Image (cartoon, rainbow, N blue to C red; front, top):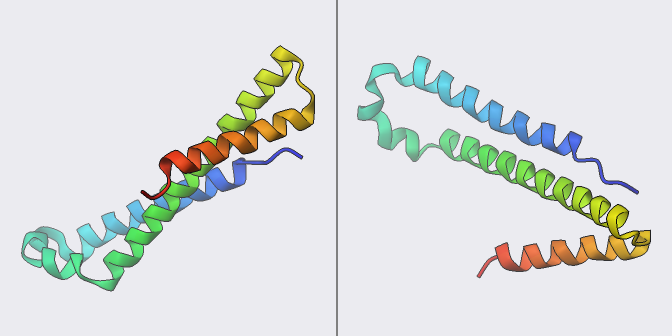
Length: 107
């Protein structure tokens, strides 16, 4: 079974786009030219925290989608070039994901 990353990639882009729209609306209509005076209020508000989480989730979903897509493409190129049977390729993908998670994971 091939993993589809189109739906998750679109979701990540949607979340980041929503974040950018909310930031621009708040900047223009709520604070306007008085943002510098209200900066501390905005940065400590629940709204700022909520859309910060939205932005982080969106970027992580996009990153995961691109990583998964790259692994799938890499495995297909390797399988076709070296004529490796399917199960070995799936094992290689799982091994690569494990190595990436180990390197990038929390220290």
